[in-house]
Image 1: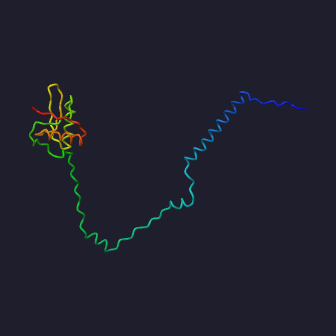
Image 2: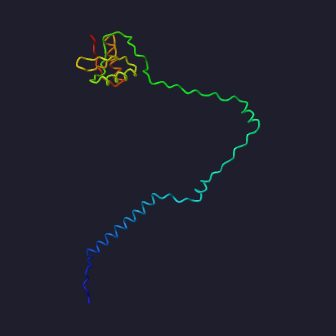
Image 3: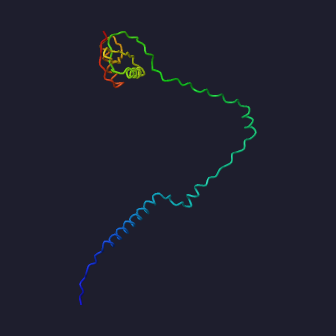
Length: 171
């Protein structure tokens, strides 16, 4: 007699159990794998031997060394260095007379203009603050007696301070 083969189909409860068991087993496998990364490697006998340290007691000083140390002069104390606050690299003096300036910046706020002047003076530039009628504070670099000198200074200011200024002539 030949029996017909019937396929077994799992019910919803059996499927839920199978899903739970597979999820728990996957989590257990992941936990075991990740725990191995955090465990320190097992110590071997050679590693334990390397941890032992031996100290050698210091040599006793002989009488000649002790006498020499007593006879020598004490060391001269070291004076602490005097620290002065940062100052401009050179004194700012208006030595050149002229009518040509390079306008480096213009601000509505006088405090920002003074900050820019301080930065330029620390870089070694002669500066001037020109307050205009409309309340703008212009930061000028100079003066120079010729237009050619002012153009050279403008290029140098662009190179060194990364400021693209323009030339103005004071009346």
